[in-house]
Image 1 (cartoon, one colour):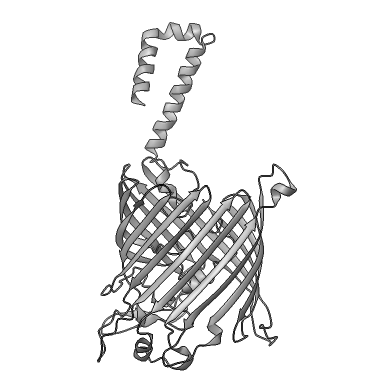
Image 2: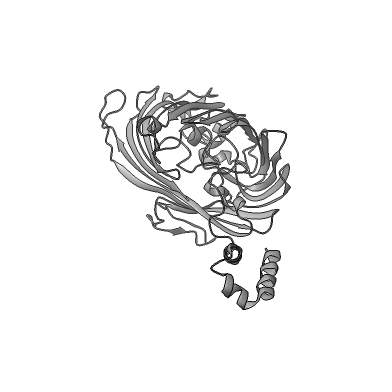
Length: 445
């Protein structure tokens, strides 16, 4: 760029003002030089602004969602992106056995997210996600403060938090280092939660209860590429807190979220993916670690190691989009953990949890209106999951073995904006599930 400026300046000085005046309307070379000067001026202004202007394509990079990957597309300086989604839910008035239930329809602005990144140079960058959940944060209960310690608790209706924040150094594509608050690299939704890329008004139940999206933790690790089409990530992060596990929600409440987390027993997580061509990805992930973070109770040592693994695949080919996940977890010492937590009967922890889903959709609009800029996807998803299987010293609760069939339609007026409408037929072995209708609006930028 500097070379062009010097050359152009030299040409202008050597030619003199008379040359420009006499040939401005005749010599096309002058017009071309003026065009190049204008281009260079715009590039300089872009650099002065820290490259905030749009300089990247919307595509997933290094395991992150498309909008979350914007920092990788700037040359230097700040990157901004984000996403949001709103959900309307209308519940049936009867459960699956036809018994009347009291329900209330609800609408919720689920989340508004801001991605803020900064690229220091070609090797070093910072990336982060800030999220407001449920539209606001309001106190709904009286704050109770311990007069001795000053600690207090309050019930909140919403949440404002940090979803991830990491510094990344990478000398080349084969190997890089990340440290900070990291997204756990399991499944297909935890690292890519933005609503336009996935089908469905709500995230799959498998990736809420078996893989508890959104799942993050403080730590550090490596990532890179190994051979044609292969990519991998391996992190050492804070472990789960087994004292918060529950039979209904599984390990979900055991996430520590990177806030004053106890790390007496960290966890190791790793992922390997293979991209076999445009739109095809398949891989596997695992996380393992002891989950008892408190002082040891009397008797034998309590560790309650939990190991969770998944196999996943997705395909985007022409108008077809398809995804599938199978995940399974094993909790060692589930009986001892249940005893320590005082759980009895059907509320005791199971040794195993599992779940899987298949979903697919097809853009039919090219068949109906050729050349249209819109996309119209009829889609379907079927999933089954159970958070409590094989219960030592207790019984399995049939309510926790769930099946969901979702049929829906999504309209994309723009690749980064989506409107979804769907029907969820919900079932469990206790015949107490309630089905529902959903309408969702989502966007990313």
